[in-house]
Image (cartoon, rainbow, N blue to C red; front, side, top):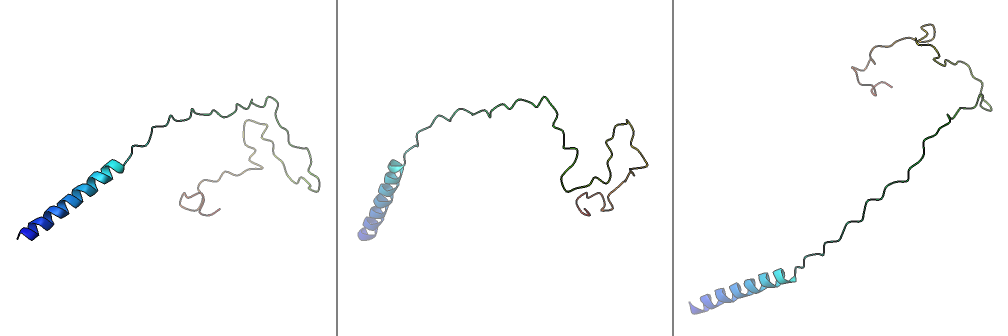
Length: 93
């Protein structure tokens, strides 16, 4: 019986030593100051509009509508209500 108690004490000492060593070996990592935020460069706004070329080499313009009026020209455009896909715009494109 003394041997059993002695083995139990040895296991307890071993476990306690192991726990103490694990706790002592853990170091708290140093707290580093975070880098200050870097602001992206400020790009000045475009003050002059970028106009597309009047013609592209190798292409012929077949139809054009510049939407210069306050209303849609119904001779050129038709209003569609719904997509045919139960409201899912990407389903039937």
